[in-house]
Every structure is written in C-alpha cells, then in structure tokens.
Length: 101
Image (cartoon, rainbow, N blue to C red; front, side, top):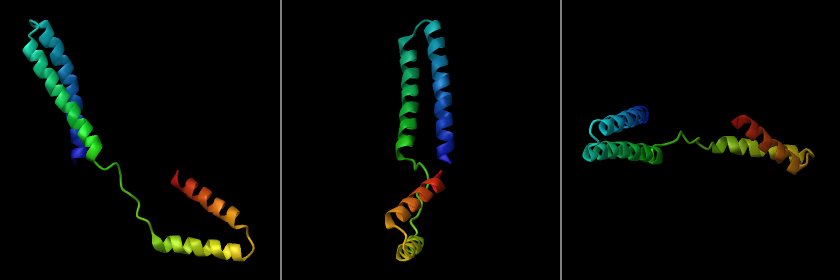
C-alpha cells in the first residue's frame, strides 16, 4: 500500500514546493520561507529514494527442484537417444529465454 501512496505524496510535494518557492520569492524574497520549502522538498526526495532502495522490486520466482529434475531427465533421455548434448542444452536455454519474454 505504501508503495502506491508515498510516490504520489512526494510528487505532490515536489509540485507544491516549486510553486511555494516561486510564490515565496515573489512575496518579498524571504530566505527563511524559501529554505524551509526547499528542505521539505529535499525530505520528500529522500523519502522517495529510501522507498526505492528498501521496497521489493517484485516477487522472486521460486525455483522448482522437481521441474528442474524432470527437465534434466528429458535432456538425458534425448542425449541417450543420440541427440547432441550441446545442441539440446542450447535449445533448452533458448526456450527458457523465449518463455521469459
């Protein structure tokens, strides 16, 4: 849930911060107000960077030992039947690459 609302809040803070700095500069050029708005924008940027560093990017696919063993048995059966092992393994690699797309 936080993965959705934190970037939105940060984006709103960035837009509001830019507008706030412009308005504060026009309204008397008060350095304290401009610095405060800038610090709030910096904190939003740090929060966004921290979220990107610690939040999981996606799920890690579980390795299925049983399926890998079945595949290895099929490769061994093809090699035993007379197929070239290097070509069979290259075919398996290409099929896996195609399946990931």
